[in-house]
Image (cartoon, rainbow, N blue to C red; front, side, top):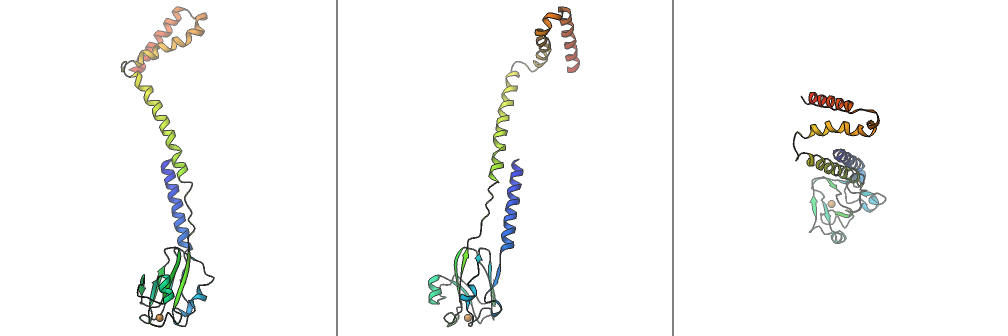
Length: 207
Ligand SMILES: [Cu+2]
């Protein structure tokens, strides 16, 4: 039961991760125009819904521009001196790992002020929490705890008397049960015969 619940939870987790991976979108900044001084990235970003896990691909001529992620203040000031990250390889892919606003500018002098700046507002990804997982895991636990104490004390009181004490107990019980109904019909001889047969049967069974 516990392992079944665990595998259910694992399956749910795999489904969630697969779903989020499939939902991740890769955006080419500026589309076919790429990352250039003539781009209008406010217009490009407007109407797009960015989620955690999505990625931005900046396409430009390597060395001609940079992609710097900066703070809101540095974005406004077009300053890349305290950039969070920078790249100038020519094709820069940035995965949006956290929700909130992410600011990107080009660090080449004059480029940011001429429009090479992009801000994206990343929404928090919908987290499908595995709610059903804790319920099945908890249910079997009390059941197992109940059965264990029941069987353990039952066998323990019998064993201290003697290890072979089980045999006389079973021999005596069949006449005891029938004595209520057999008091009217059965004779003492019949009872003795039954007891003897029972003893023989028990001994044969024991050996
Ligand atoms: Cu530039």
